Image (cartoon, rainbow, N blue to C red; front, side, top):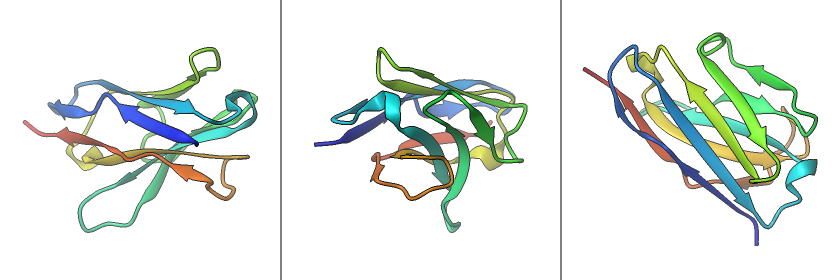
Length: 118
């Protein structure tokens, strides 16, 4: 059974930082891409960042320069370091896996809430 478990969400002030983790099990981690998505209240889910099996990252324009994605294949975990956070970054953040970035999603995590507020 494939499981993706996100952690690290919470409440942070504007300008602050937070690091999310996505721990995977039941999947050949080295072979898959892992992406981060987010969904704010009343809005559609959107892609935030993705990292390929060969460690190539990509970012949505809204987060480029502020977020950094990385992966640890030994720990089977993907990290999303978020800095210079803005209130508009408030959302539930989900990780997901598939064979490639921008390809079909095979599995989703349950999500972790990030709230940016003073």
